Image (cartoon, rainbow, N blue to C red; front, side):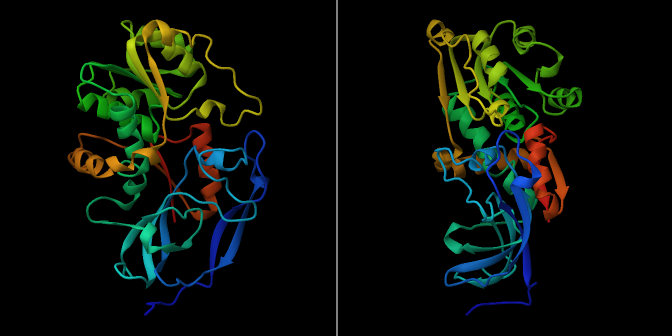
Length: 340
């Protein structure tokens, strides 16, 4: 039997109106009202409380062939969300339960119970299930430990280090015994955060000068692991400082996401031959088998304060687009979250 309290008649949501060319523009999107649907068999209706905006969403706005289907024109977009069940037509999920799901960019969502993950708001703040204990956290954990084969004593360089993924990569590396962790960021304030709060050994503002030179100054003995969130000149700099047997985990290349022409590759890619280095791209979806281990190991670090995190919170569904554009500009420190 469906448990259905009194609900609003409409839900506000964001649609993709046209495929952006270069930087997304407000006219590429539509903010519309839609009827609040009722859950069918095996479904729940969720009132979203927190929405995630992430760099990968820019790729889904294009119709180029990729690892995931593009957003459909004229349809509501998708993304990570956590919210409260307000109507249930499914066994195992009751009104009042909180769930993590993937139907963000809207106020209300009908979610199949089998694709919703129940979360405990008493164990950790709900927003953390979108960040430090969610997909971004698992991205950091799997990319560093599995893809980059991190080992104790490594020197690690992280680009976009004040972002949700990068900040966690550097801290996990320190906790796991890195000999030195270096981060790059786009402001002096973020550099200060990396060193004074996150415990990085060194950090630099990539706007202050050539990345290659600043990295050599910060890591005079070279690097063993590079966790790439940026691409471009950062990848070239990392290749230039890579030690023998070095590993590069390619998580993202935000510097080229809005390019209208193919970005040139690193001029020094041949250094992988001399260093016997390895460069591997990855998707977090390939590593969900690590989720239980990740939560078991990382949650206590978060609870104790050993692993710190930041969130940039934007209020209101009407500001969801601006929050997303802010991620592309680098406005956020830590995870960008939209609070409804």
